[in-house]
Every structure is written in structure tokens, then in C-alpha cells.
Length: 296
Ligand code: PMV
Image 1 (cartoon, rainbow, N blue to C red):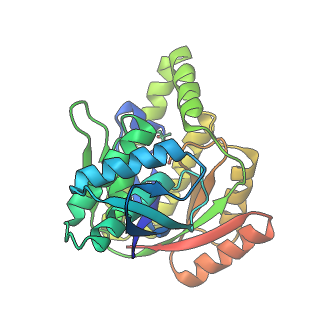
Image 2 (image 1 turned 90 degrees about the horizontal axis):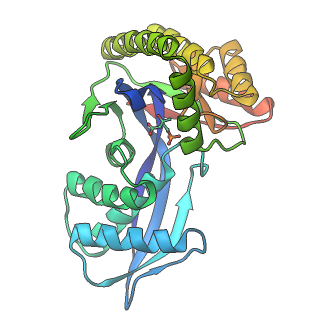
Image 3 (image 1 turned 135 degrees about the horizontal axis):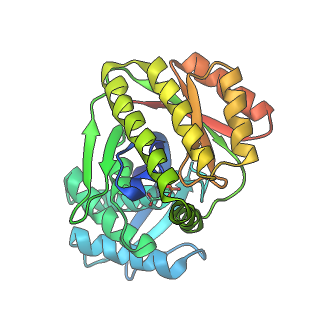
């Protein structure tokens, strides 16, 4: 029997705008998913949910790691809310790949683990960008740009660690529908949307610069500006706005929704653990689940 873990992720900047080729910034969370696997006569997944996909995903991971023997996935322990845009499918895939690597003493590199998890992501998401499995494998901060013929994914060295507080709205947004809605609005008013994209491009450029310099105040301000644009394209909700407002009143340097919106989670930036704790308890007091994570 062996264990493995994969990290969750949160989008710091750029959801929706990355679809149109703008640069996004993503952070790996400390929380994630842990699994236990063991050798078995045949492949087995101990779940009723998405059973067929889970089985296909296990086979794809095994194929990528070059394992022929049977594997039983015994236990799955998730610290991430499902459907919250926190990258749970990629975290699970990385956890399975690492657990198999441990069980069979394969000694695969981190890159091989990441590639195996990508094969699993393809089963759930068709043509995934690769950012979730990269964050789930390595953690840290990752810069991402979608490009025809190969997305650009780079790890960003940050000057100073920081804390991200997550507030869970309790509602689920459906990424595919939200992306479709934004596209429709764009098609109805191309001029407006190209202006929004232009504003976002400046935000992401400044955010890369501020993260590189460790200027967290600036990063927070840019998160607020990013949220204004997300509101403008129509993906924020009453609950997300409430979490953001509570965070900002309780010492956050900035706050925004994360992921596709329409539900899911909001994030707030805190400069240290004490502040993160305070913001997180205020969000809980307002009636939402919350946790925080150190980044970097
Ligand atoms: O909710 P998530 O973590 O799957 O994020 C969706 C991000 C979008 O930009 C809205 C869609 C995409 O494919 O990039």
C-alpha cells in the first residue's frame, strides 16, 4: 500500500481572459487530495461517482507511467471542495500518479508525474491547457498563456511568500456555460470586450512585475481591478461579492472571484498568517466555508 498527494490550485489573475490569449497567473494551494493505492489482480476504483471516467483516468495514468499490473485505488481523501474551481480533478490525478510511483518504486521525475496527470485531465476535459496538472504537481506560482500549437507555462519566482484566503460561495458555477456566456457577450459587443481585454493585459503585466518585486499591496490593488472586469463581464454573484466585501473590510490587500465564477470561490490576499486567519474567520462568520493557504 502506498500514498500520494496532489495540490489544488487557484487562479490569481486572468480567468476568462486567458481564453482569448491573455496571460493568467495561478497559485498551487497547500491543500489537495491524498490517495492510497495497492497492487491488485485487476484495476479497481472505490467510488460510484464518475466510475467510468475514473477507471479510464487510472488506465491513462498507468499507461503514461508504464505500469501493466493491476492497481486498486483504496482511499481518496480530499481537502478541496468539488466543483469549486480549485483544480480537484488534476490534484486527484497527480495524487494517483505519485501513489503508483511509490507503490511500484518507479522513481519517476516530477515532470513524468505531471505528464501522466495531464493524460488523465484529457479524459475529464478533452483538451485541457495543462495548467491545473502543473500547479497540482509543483505548487508555487505559475504563469500561463494559451497559444496555438502549445501553451506557454512558466513557474514564477516570487520575492515574498503570501497568504491566500479562500471563501466558498456554496453554489456551483458551470465553467462551460460561463465561458459560453462571456463569448456571447463579446460577440454582441466586440468593441467593449476588446477594451476590457486591453485593461486586463495591463493588469496582468503589472501583477507579474509586483509579484516579482514582492509588492503585495500592489498585487492586492490589481486583484481588485481584475474583479471590476470580472463583474463587468457578468460572472460574479451576490455571494462572491459578499465574501469579497467581508474580506476587504477585514484587512485583505485585495480580493476577487477565482475560476469561472457564477458560484465557486472567491480569494483574498493577506500579507501574513495572522491577517489570513482574521479574514478567514470573518468569512466564516458571514456564513461561508473558508480556509487559507501559504503561497511560495
Ligand atoms: O473554474 P476553473 O478553475 O475550471 O477555471 C476556469 C477558467 C476559465 O478561464 C473560465 C476557463 C478556461 O478554460 O480557462
